[in-house]
Length: 132
Image (cartoon, rainbow, N blue to C red; front, side):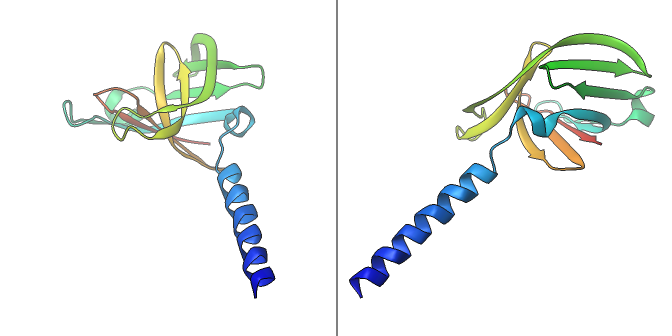
């Protein structure tokens, strides 16, 4: 019985470590071209902006060499570096994956094969949604 209990504990620990590592954001997982879909303002400045309401399109390209290139209406407007690291979120004071570029830091709220959602990591809390 004791061996069965120890085996269960070891199995649980390996499963837990695997699931935590699987959620880690790496710079290679963000590398791609992302097209802006919508921005939603935070509680102090509520708004919704889309390419149609704003009157322009926007895309960002994250490269393997740590650069982010921003395009507005398919014209390059910025070329800077980005950095992904663990940090504390402004709103929930919990650890998150943060991305910093163009002088601002964002919490990576969602990142999968087709979606990227980032939230400003300060009191305004604006959310921006991109698609591949």
